[in-house]
Amino acid sequence: MRTPLIAGNWKMNASLAANATLLAGLLGDEAGVSAELAVCVPAPYLAQVQSVLGGSAVRWGAQDASAHERGAFTGEVSAEMLLDFGCTYVIVGHSERRSYHAESDELVAQKAQRALASGMTPIVCVGETLEERERGATDVVVARQLAPVLDAMGTQLASMVIAYEPVWAIGTGKTATPEMAQQVHARLRAMLAERNTESAQQVRILYGGSMKPDNAKDLLAMPDIDGGLIGGASLNVSDFLSIAHAA
Ligand code: PGA
Image 1 (cartoon, helix red, strand yellow):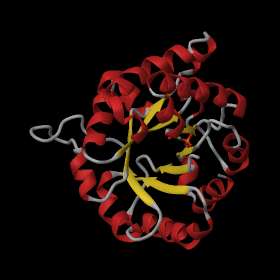
Image 2 (cartoon, rainbow, N blue to C red):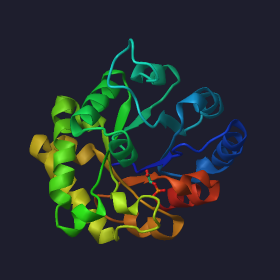
Image 3 (cartoon, helix red, strand yellow):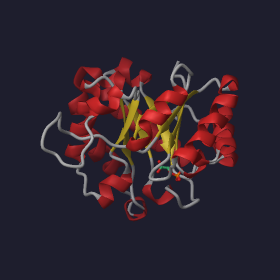
Image 4 (cartoon, rainbow, N blue to C red):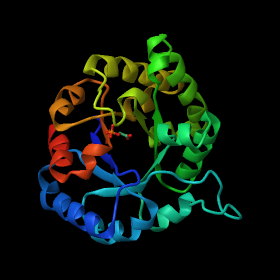
């Protein structure tokens, strides 16, 4: 039985004051939520988030981590630094990083491996563009993105989370139908099962891309959708919690 995970991805939206309000709102209502809750925040706010959420059931994480362990990599943040601030999760391979920062499938796999080696759970994002979907390449694209990650995870496959995020659905208000999403999730789980059938049943596969209170329930009812990676709606505490209650 997989415990659903509802993870917020704040992206580059935060301030000390706004975070304080949002986190207080989350703590006010998280007791009624049976899903696991997490927020992935910009790195400068990790200390704040750790001090507010520490001791609660809400976990936190970051949105990226370096593939390198330490050293002369100006501007980068290592997985061990994130762990120092109590991060449980780190998102790797978000489509915004793949496209704006030219992150390759191999780099994403290295980042996932480094996160895991440091004791965190990588949330590995995969997903096709609209053009790729329209030419029927969705399965090929997500398989290509996931394969090097599965190689990198080796026997620790069960220690990862996958997020299927169709690029055309991110921040656009367009959502994959529950059936469309389920089809890809099932394909991803089948890929996991080719490596290890037991781990495949344990790995949570989240859906991301304009998940909102009004579509969350139907998406989360699908057998292979084990939660959500929530962008825009995670900045509104009542929307985020209402998605969490749907899980
Ligand atoms: P969205 O973003 O919910 O705003 O579409 C999801 C994501 O990019 O993780």
